[in-house]
Image (cartoon, rainbow, N blue to C red; front, side):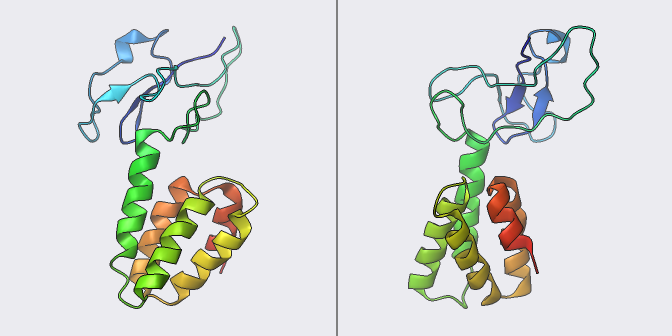
Length: 158
């Protein structure tokens, strides 16, 4: 049987099994104070959780999804991380306006695995070499949370 999680709007896991363990439910996150949800705000479908087998202990962690499995919309925590990543780019004085816009577009292309992911990842990596280490590291920290696995490998390799 599938477990359904409760997650705050910033992406903090509150309860892995909100239906089966309601005593752990919270209206607001105790880490950041944001409201909690159990379903997609776009289509109302329950957020998928871990699959639970009766009488089987599962020690694997739960990976919080980035997108709704039903409608494909990004969850609020994914949208916010993408927004913050793009705002970060605006502080990169070493880049021209055109380069900043290109970098922002490439951020969109590294979020999911698609035919553009590898090329976009190489472009992001290239632009990060043109800015200070602090800004590059800050953007990488954000991108690690939202980029596809393919993109992470390319951007994070040194």
